[in-house]
Image (tube, rainbow, N blue to C red):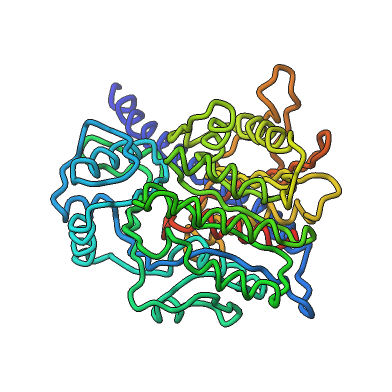
Length: 478
């Protein structure tokens, strides 16, 4: 009589397995349907606004350009025989293999983006040679300005690009781009050391996908296309001027006073711009405190729009408030934290009256892995904030996945189902709605829009993500 009871055990186990499989299948279908709804809604928001085909936006952007060599960061370290370091150290620039290992160990575990100048030519050549031995090595157009220019052109803009480039670099630029700058024979090379979420380097494990960039530039730090760019600017009649690539000046061995002279020349150009022409400054991974202070004097006061990521926002805020910088910040910040930091930066930069060609900040765009946030002054030149935020969000997936078509099977949402608009007690909480994923509201003198990102789960590349996102966000706002 015991046999039937024994037979029930495997039958119950089988039933439990079938139920578990069924629940997982249902859960997966529900998640997929949710992502599809979010995607459809974001696309609808993006497409609410179109460009004027009779007179496309005209955008002038500088400076620089390079050839990106993109490799797996861990594979490159192994190929170059650079062992993992368990002494993570923040170095402003890289001179030795030990410093490279320590610096990589500093940024790799939290998955924080970083860019460093390599002062040792022998070491840089060794890294480039090692990268060429890797089977998955590929090259692409690099540099903030050219990458943004190609994105702006792809979106239908006419572009004036300030940069000195090689024939190879120019060959991959859109026909809608006019280059201001004498050509060069050899392009500056940037090594893009990418890694996915969960990558392992010794005992280190990355918390999120990102990249560590090293370069040994000679042309870009001098912004040596500035004079050609300035001479063509008036005849181009831009609607918007974009400045980027100034992180190439970081830790570069300038002669005494040389960097200040170049930044003063840039300041003179910016201060002479017609105030009806918008000016956007794209931030980057700055680590040299003196350079950041120079930017606060020569560039930021002449920009009415700023673009930055979740590392660069607290970095700039810390410098303004306390006179120092914070190189590492939370790679997965809460919405409320970012919004509070944006408000604080907005108020600090608007606290002084503009003088002599200076401008008041009227637009702030912060791009994070999980969401896009835009803050725009009411009544300013910037328009279509909701659609622009949606476009920035969609561009994040398109670029990182390497496809114009978004596949929700290769995406996930990491933003919470609701968010507080501030860390202050009693702050409003906004629920996330799949059918209306872009949340917009007004506060005091500005409007804020926030959109979730369909985070790419099969990463093609992270380098250039911020440039593509910022450029796409600007297109619909001018």
